[in-house]
Image (tube, rainbow, N blue to C red; front, side, top):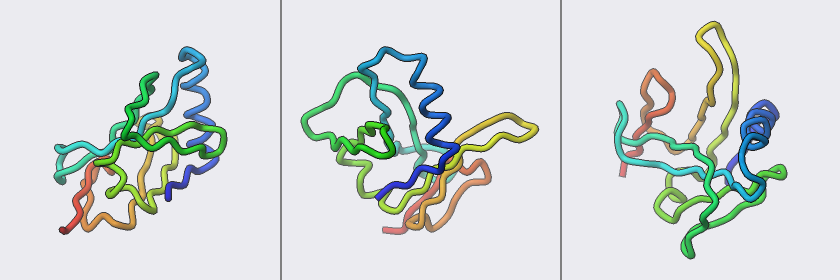
Length: 108
């Protein structure tokens, strides 16, 4: 369903180490951005009854039911360049993406 590169796993682990021990990694898709939808990554301690919790590379990932349909096959990478570091997304379902790489659209 979702793939994390080794650098993404390392960065999520580094960020999580600064959070309380019961913190989980939440991935969601929200409306907005340059191309209609965008990825939202956050840490969360609350799991809603409808959420799906996945164990990926020792990372517990929470995904809400609305986001599940948009992230099947999603690959998340992390890289650093002269402008700084950031997560990079490759979504095979996206029909278009914004130049920022965080916003996308899917034809319905």
